[in-house]
Image (cartoon, rainbow, N blue to C red; front, side, top):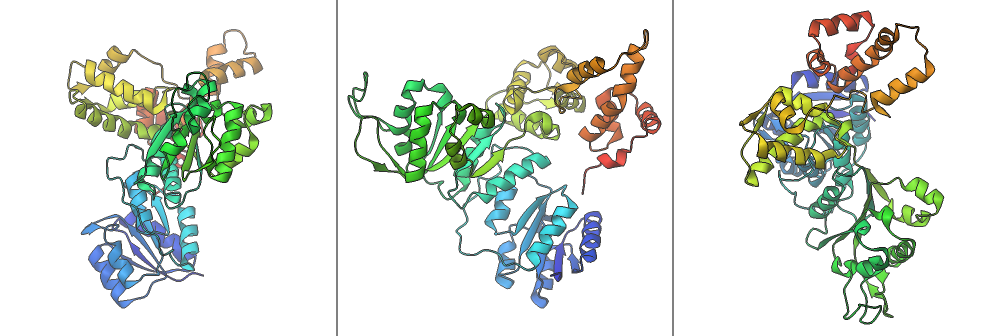
Length: 471
């Protein structure tokens, strides 16, 4: 299976790691650092796989893949990029990349993808949709969001039903809009309906429409959301709140592709892609009989889970900058955040997730007296909130402390020292994990001196290198 590979990468450190890993697999590798050198190599050599960065010294590696296809139409191409946006992932998909890897990437995953690509051929015949440009609303460069982007690109050229799950405020409707706007149905309507906001006795009428006289108050015929979305996408938000009878009718519509208005006799064919979303755990609801299991499997063809903001804190800075720019477009003053203010934002709990962060940034832009917002100004406007280093762990640090106190019985006068001993190591490890092993940032996050942190790392026998993020 190993063969020849053209590596187009101008970062020597990354190239060295990739070459070492792939040579161990038996690949013969030719490396170049520019588009012009890439084209020269392709004109005189046949390669089994090409692995390319996007931003190169003489241009955009993605924008010029059409030239590569003319020379080597069947060669699989794997794309690497430090510009970890949904737009980049979609551009890679549009250019029929075999796989897309955001930086930092998992080296084992990359090696496996190259091995799979070596014996494959790129798919053909699909018409690629236009991308949404740099203004796409989904923002984030964390590994968790890269997984979301990659799932989105996998469903753009098909009509498979998608179930988006995640806490309130994580951006489930944005995912649905991105799939619609970037997919083959983008010229059709996008219709969104929040089933939790509709009285239960009106859900069926809202979705399927009704005929005149179908019920008290039905003074005229009404077209439902299914018919309104014909040829496009119907987004069913908070699907877990749908009443049982409406679930039955929805299942029938999904199975047959036909609906019947309330009070009507005629069946109407509809061509609609369904994207559903919920912030509830449907498993217990199925077990309790409040949500149909067969409907769940019909909806959950492609699951996309949106992570809460506390599990992707490294995205908070880029999200904050995005919302500051958005606030200016909405007529608010231009503001900047200091690094200390960003770290303070990263330490907050964000129970309302991205929606809460957006509201906070707008409040800061409106109420700040200075153009530069520091940590003191942030406290004045928002009020202080104690950092929660254990928020990412189930129950948080307070729950963990309560559980520890339930197990332990420290001797009189030793409670403080015992608690510090029990919690200092996991607290430091969590800070290192949050900062990718960067001891300076971890010390700032903890609020201690860097030398003190370094000393405690040694005394507690912590290995900081294991928290370093991959290349």
